[in-house]
Amino acid sequence: MSDKLINATNLKKSFDQFIAVDNIDLSVSRGEVVGFLGPNGAGKSTTMKMLTGFLEPDNGEIFINNINLKSDPLKAKEYIGYLPEGAPSYSDMIVEDFLSFIGKMRGLNNNSLSNRLEEMANKINLKEMWNRPIETLSKGFKRRVGIAQALIHDPDILILDEPTDGLDPNQKHEMRNLIKRISTNKAIVISTHILEEVEAVCSRAVIIANGKLLANDTPKNLENKFLNKNTVSIKVSNKINNVISKEIKSLLKYDDVKIQKTDISTHTILVSDNQKNPNLNTVLKQINKLKLDVIEANFQKVSLEEIFRTITSDNNSK
Amino acid sequence: MNNYLNKTYIILDRELKGYFRTPLASIFLLVFLALSSGMTFFLGRFFERDQADLTAFFSWHPWLFLVLMPAIGMRLWAEERRSGTIELLITLPVTNTQLVVGKFLASWIFTLIALILTMPIWITVNYLGEPDNHVILISYFGSWLMAGAFLALTSCLSALTKNQVIAFIISSISGFVLIMAGFNLVLSAVRSWSPNWITETISSMSFLSHFSRIQMGVFDLSTLVFFISMIILCLWINVQLVQVKKAD
Image 1 (cartoon, rainbow over the protein chains, first blue to last red):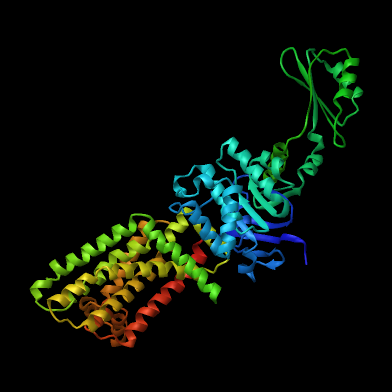
Image 2: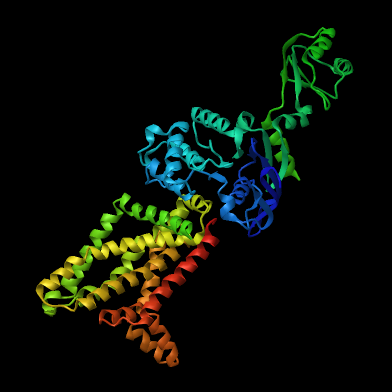
């Protein structure tokens, strides 16, 4: 028995000649929020569709709460709440009827259904739209209805395909707060191509491109793996010739020191290291020894976006 | 078993109410009543016939259903696929068979409501004369059975496409083929080159042949088996098509 709520191994899915998902392993425990990252067409949605039982993998196995999704799909699906891409719903139904329909299909009895409906109305802030047809709601409210239908049976596993796509910044913020609030006792998988989302809500980032899993780690560990991308940047208003350049490089005990001409009168010194973060103060002290006129100095930490670009472009070039 | 039927009922309930959530239901019922009465009184010459029966009413049903049943059933799966709600349905803890049967039954019950609303014509003919009510009752039941076969065919074909108009057209064409299979014109053309059993098989596949017998008050087991088998076969293919086409 595994303590993983989702345990998928060697997932593979092809459409005709196109391999959408190529041998992906993924496991998620309770309390984890996994950010599924990848460019458009990377295989994120296909993987999620397999995890929810919508698509059958060509190869590999999926266990939902230790239940084999293939051999007992009805039982396994009971543990999953799913928000498909674009949050589809029956637009002619009013919010209450739609959530009630999903709740009944999820096996809730009348008593627990009315409790859950009330909880959804309050928790997801749907009260004011409760009796409105879904087709008349704004995109933000439609997304909330989508989240509410996924949560109606209080599932252990939540799979959300691009939950903030198309929302305005305020709505995105609200949606992330909501996901954080509900994440404590669930296993959540969120697909997105917005990196700030992963930094904001996810405890683990999984990066896929061209159907292949390229990284699977915490955002912090991913950043540590790309320490050499953390750079101290010093802009000086001096002309730097070869002699000074050699002096700078011998003074700074770091793996990589680059000097770039910024414009006619200024140069920028870029310092990075494979093993540790370059220290801004130390670098400044060394530069001052050469009596250079520093006009700008900062430490640039690698962003998840840069990591994502590096990983996915490396994969493309292969 | 109870849970199985319960989920099928929840789908049926949502679908049936769905017809009445939009003006579709009232428009359909109005068109059905207008066309069926119009055909009975004008094309069927109800009064000129001077007979206390509903032959003039029921004889047009195959042609009426040819257009109206695809109109009811075209959205059953095409709309789910177009709007993406099929993804919601399939990921619920429910089988494809429950979904297909629930949706089909909703459309069939809706047709029953439409047929019940034509009952004033039955009352009228009883007021004007002394019709054989046994034949009329059998004809009503036969008409509903035939509507079910048309609907099952439409439901099945609507799973092939995301476009309701295409679903409507292919269902109407397929229905037309099944009606025409009983026509003498078609049968004599086939009879000229094929063995007798082929002609018999084609004739036995015809909605028109079976429904003509029902209209005469002859409701034999073969007719019941034909329509029920037709419904079950179409729904079985429907389940397979949903499975194959869901992610297209």
